[in-house]
Image 1 (tube, rainbow, N blue to C red):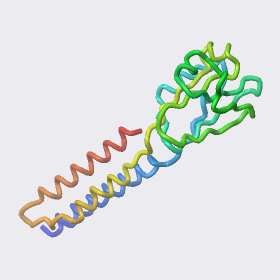
Image 2 (cartoon, helix red, strand yellow):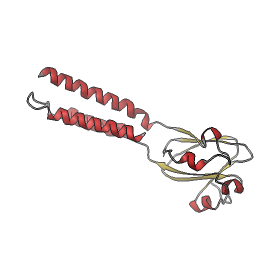
Image 3 (cartoon, rainbow, N blue to C red):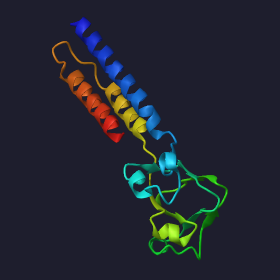
Length: 176
């Protein structure tokens, strides 16, 4: 039985290592190049590009564009919808600009020329909180580590711990 307990602990440690390695990058800052290869351009489909993106606090969004186009960050959904650049938060004109997503909430970017904005050159970014899967995993591992040693007649605790960690692995894989 000691061999089974030792093997089960090995499996448990292995699963923890795999989960930590998989989740380690989940809290990392990501760089998003708006519009992908086409960049910030009236011909690109910014709405389609942004559909599957998750923007988190600390991420960077990069705008690549011709100086003639520009990017304007506006304050409200109304300014965004009506392509109103009369009261901007900032105007980007350098051709290559990074914007750090410093807080949760909505951010609105529109084309520097109203006609480009009306033709769809606009981006609404919903900034989500930074993921903390590693911290959650550490709490689970601590609870498992602090638990009593399983007796030779009961391996249910080890089995349940393994199931819990497998569930965390699945959650981490779903997150991406």
